[in-house]
Length: 335
Image (tube, rainbow, N blue to C red):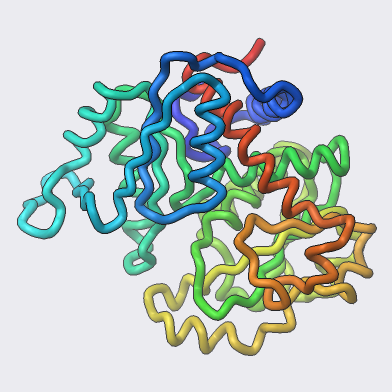
């Protein structure tokens, strides 16, 4: 079993199924002193509502103590090997990760890419540095992927659909006035293909394709499961017969760092909003989004408030799946 939980790509389908089964058990019986006496550092380089609350409450329900470190703007850390540290960072990850490892039993990190140099940022440098130098397990609370969110998505989908094998999953791009992180879309592709769903990525043009490592991994996982991973720019083709629709916004990678140009490129595609007309083409599909979600921009009120909307269930499931992950990296997967 992997020591860290950095991406679902590192975990087998059987291991993910075991995590989800444990999450269901923890949802039924929330208070278990599995991690009594343990300490967990939650390092936030980006703010959070669901992630921070669910990890803190989850640690408490497992008997552990969570120490929250608000690092944004207050704790600049260098992570490059051989760096001449004459800029803002006063501490290197070599020291930070090892010192934290002497204090706590588990380190969780949330650090978004800045989308200025994707060739460097696609290597997930902050998370990779902590994983390299820490002597305790690391959990990814969202960097260039968001594995905890997609476990919560999978659990919500299982609760609504039962067995996910062969279900048609549509990952649709939606408009947003600002270019956002690709992490949730990356992870949704990884998780859905790994769990044996037929996955369709819907986006306006090829400029909105995800990084090739996630596209290639999605294709490989689909192949391993005897399923499909396809890309379309045709809205009707994507929605037709879908069992699950998952919405997310992200900026076009070819214009990385040029926010005005990204906004200009995205402006004509507001019609990618998830609305009642599109959902009517599906196989009575469920709808979900990782939240926060701009209503009537990404999805209409009618879709968000529909009985087939899983947005609140998925958000709740962050608590349960993260408790399963914390248990697994510290205690091992349940047998």
